[in-house]
Image 1 (cartoon, rainbow, N blue to C red):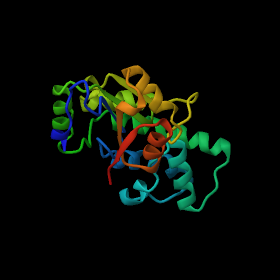
Image 2: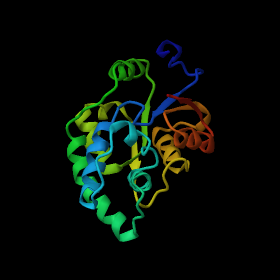
Image 3: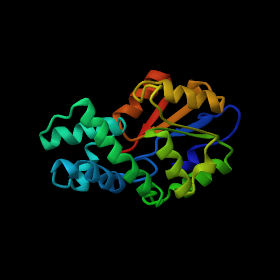
Image 4: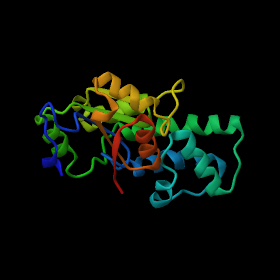
Length: 200
């Protein structure tokens, strides 16, 4: 697939933006550690990794809500905050281990960079955790623009984050390709006016 990408001035795409979790990295085992640590004080038995995969997409708060629903409990706003306060330190530590990069990811990033295509990253993972993970994985230098989730910016499928990445790269939506694995990714691409590739 990589051979289809060229860097000539008239070629499409002129830039590629990637999602992170489920696209370049399998973060489900790390998220499982954090989810289980967050829910353990509530007496919830540990979730297995396949179940945790169904929670992913939309950011940590969404994952916590899905996990609570799966466990058959209702979290108040204060409970949700306390659960997230337990989730994030464990997730940060796990992300710092630099695990889960999909086979071939480095080779693909190398290939696209060698072709002169600017790359961006747009993820619903919290920005501080994103920064930790990218450094640990060793892939931060590949990206000209990196946008993770922040409290003051709506998450995908809202197009704001993706548009920010494209603006930072300096590419119009019609010249960009967004690669992701979730409905939120494809929805963001459609809303932003760029084409997308969905990874199963």
